[in-house]
Length: 137
Image (cartoon, rainbow, N blue to C red; front, side, top):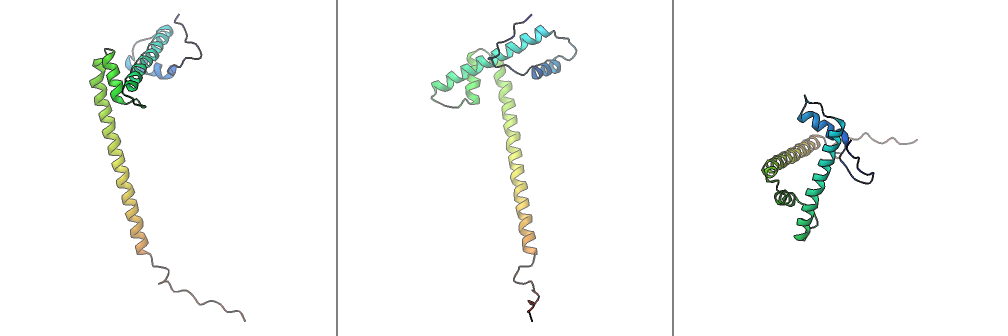
């Protein structure tokens, strides 16, 4: 049986890992021990890459790990095959994000223009005829 990590270790959510396993290999049964081993390997991989990226970031006197630091870490650890695929994914996500931001700006501008048009079509308070005030007898 695979050894469970100590309670103070951070791991990935089991449900998320199980879902990924099921999506990647839908017609294969995977034992609980194998699932636990995959979970531990994924956690260790993330720890390894993030530690290496952090060292690169520190050497460059930066305080924030950027994607370029992660790519350099992957290359240094021998995972060059992941770099191009993930750069394409990252650029696609960035393009989608930019498109969404542009769409949101256009929607905001259209709403603002509509508000202006509505306010111009309403009569101003000075042109509205007020009924005379009632005088008390």
